[in-house]
Amino acid sequence: MNMNLDYLDRVRRMASLFTTRKTSDLLEGDYSSLQHGRSLDFDDLREYRYGDEINDIDWKSSSRTGKTLVRRYFADRKHNAVFVGDTGSKMTGDTPAGESKEQLALMTFGMTAYLLDKQGINYALAHSGADGDSISNFLSGAGHLERLIAGYENAIESGEPVHSLNTVLENVSGAFSKHMVMIIITDSEGLAEIDDKLLRRMIYHNDVYIFKIEDAYLTTADVFDLQANRFEDSYLSSNKALREEEEKLRREMDKAAEKAMTPYRVFFTSISKEDEIVDALVDLFRRRRGA
Image 1 (cartoon, helix red, strand yellow):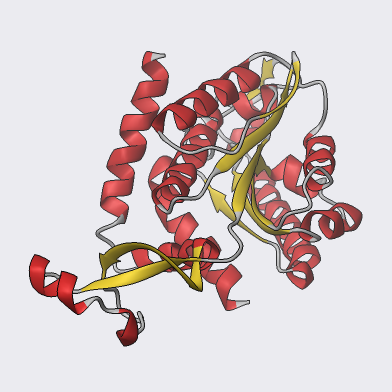
Image 2 (cartoon, helix red, strand yellow):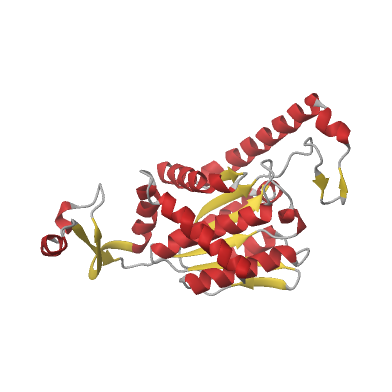
């Protein structure tokens, strides 16, 4: 439990830094459009942001508080968000930056869920572990986030999952008829396995975002192969031509995935270390909005 609290503290610190960035309204704008609309039901007040309607300014409240406040209204349709997390031993490896894929996946989930929570959006997490598949309720709050982080951590560390990421995505895509935001956390292997049929199924009711956790290069010194359960030969790390070929292969795989997903307005972004999470969030939602 202490580890989960540590994740939450790190998420809060990262979110605090995020809100100071000029691009913070990019993500908030996307989520606000999901949660709040132009119906007649008054919701609450918040401080004015560039681009807000002048007619929504509450002048009485603004003069009383000394801040420019705007009125928000409940939209007729509210949206939920569902996370789908990849699991298994492959998620316990390292990234090219030498960081833990598992911790990076947990922090990516925690950071994104925390920002959704701040926008008043309920979210759930689905994954498969050695004990079977799991999908949480759609809730919000610190306790909910803490429980989901603990569950995701356990699913990654419990052993090989009962079902693949594709199967979990198939099940989640067909489980709900309401429009939602679907956020997938996987790696290069998981990304490559998402085919055209699954893409069409996922986007039928969802706006889909994918975070790809990068794998360490096989041509790195002292790299451990999780599938072979051994350290790779030192020859790989000293061979410049092999390293260039591996980098080329990864670029080609990313281009192939991007080519397949772009027509469906599904975008992915890659993360290798924790301090890239915020920029990856901004980049992913900017490209999705621009499309």
